Amino acid sequence: MQQRTRVNMMIRISPVRVIGPNEEMLGVLETNVALQKANELGMDLVEISPDARPPVCKIMDYGKYKYELGQKQRKARAAAKSTELKELRLGRSVKIDPHDVQIRIDQARRFLMHGHKVMVTQRFKGREIAHRELGLSNLKEVATQLADIAKLEQPPRWFGKSASILLAPDKNKVEGLKRKLEKERAAKIAAGEHVEEEKSIEALEAELALQQVDDGPDDSDIDGED
Image (tube, rainbow, N blue to C red; front, side, top):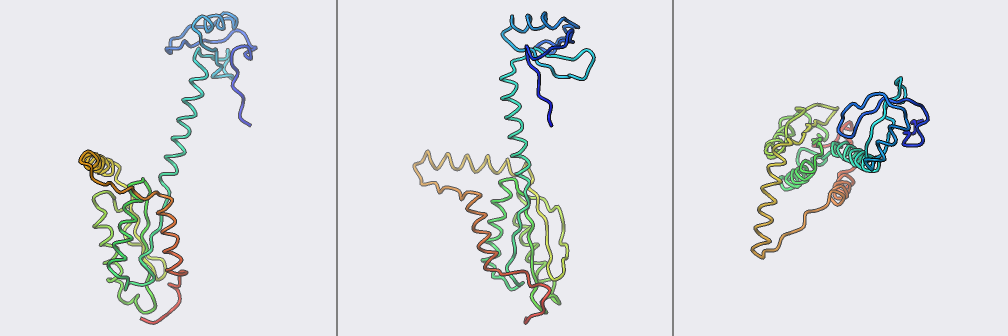
């Protein structure tokens, strides 16, 4: 169980080593003296190292500290979520239509722009595995079209009768493109032109889920017709 932070009158031990609000060392003080100094500044006395001898306390705005800590934790959780792995399948066969390949590329682009990594998988049906170069060509086309915002983190890797590449967003390139698109959007709005709203990440994920249902289960280990 996480230990509760002691603040102000909850600090029973005396004396304590005190750090000022600007990180200045105020030395070892009786706790009542440290509390008085905190009160004079309109701040709180917060115990930050209870196991030290004497315990270390800091004079700070505890409410502001808790708020900023919460903000940092939320950003950390958002950053962790932003690295989720998304998988896009290039149909059930290497014979996927070029238009459908382009749809997957556009979907991958939106995921990458949101900070997600994307695994693109090409499946081979039946004897198509004898023509690996066709599927690898599809994967290469995806990587080439997304090179302006992504890095090829993993070259084609084989899993049975399927091959996958892993693309990771290039942060600098993504941010540069976002700035460019935002300027173009602002110019269109200023000119009174219609600006289409970008599809939400939730809508994109729902669209992807439907595609995977249409693609059917992974039957790459089952021999079928060409």
